[in-house]
Length: 167
Image (cartoon, rainbow, N blue to C red; front, side, top):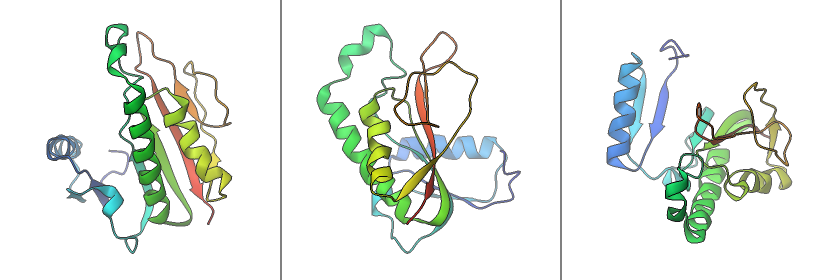
């Protein structure tokens, strides 16, 4: 809705049900200039290029669960999520030009799904963090400028970072 429908949005979702919900939300915002691709984003052709990418990566959901649900998060789920997140962020970096931006977010508060994922690409010199400011209470971070929102009665926990492609 912030675009005032003046940009073309390409949304990619491999899950048909999630894709239909995404379409509903795009329509609800009054957007007409979008295309929805039902595809695994890691399979997109690297010849496609985007000015900006918002990558809301699949994750363990650790920021959204209640204490009653904590047992549903297994080490295997977190490890599997982290691997997919690395694949997706690598693809996102390939799909933007040098200097373009990527927002990487999850609904997890685990460092292995967030800071460790983006740190891999920071250490390779492929991206840098563009600092984000917030007034909401956050959890401590090892990377300046990223945000991990602490779960509370008002907010679910989540992670967000703004990255710029360097090479």
